[in-house]
Length: 225
Ligand code: DC
View 1 (cartoon, rainbow, N blue to C red):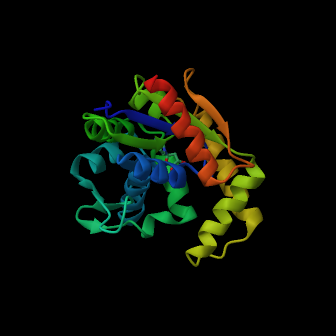
View 2: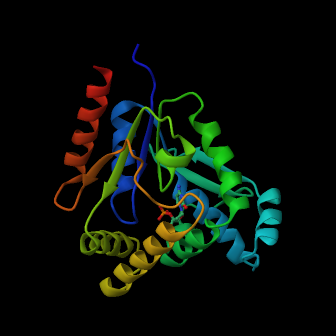
């Protein structure tokens, strides 16, 4: 039987990581983990409890907060719970994206989530996507991808995605929001967004999800020799 691998997918906002990671996991019969949702979950609680954005306050918050990921009963997606509350839908707003990015710069938050993420990948058979999976969470991952796309395209995709969820924000604002978030994620000191040296770079600007997944599957097959 083929080894159940750890597959890391990193990249900026709106590059299509979640959609492709989910589809890839489905094809391989692997677990799919969206680590951004975990940062959004911490961001959600920080906002709800009006916690100060300081290392001390967030450390306390992390120590008393229960984050749980469950496989969605309908397919390969996952549901995320904070202290038993299902926040899967609520965390998908642009505001929660910004909150996630803000809390993700703090060491205590990263340490707490790193532990959870490594635990999930212990037995392999996982497609994990985020910003630092190939560089920090699993530097020895079997296969690494860095999924990118032009900013205009990423803005368009995120805009469509939000519209489908009834959040009719305008395109310019959405594009600006992801640009700012990427800048912050790239500039932070801890586990910044960057391509791992051994990751395969994929520019998905002119590719369909299907084409990206096929490219990834080809790379995985190549690795199996
Ligand atoms: O993938 P996303 O848009 O849901 O991520 C939200 C934020 O969480 C992102 O702007 C930065 C942070 N994040 C991170 O720092 N490290 C990860 N592995 C995943 C997300």
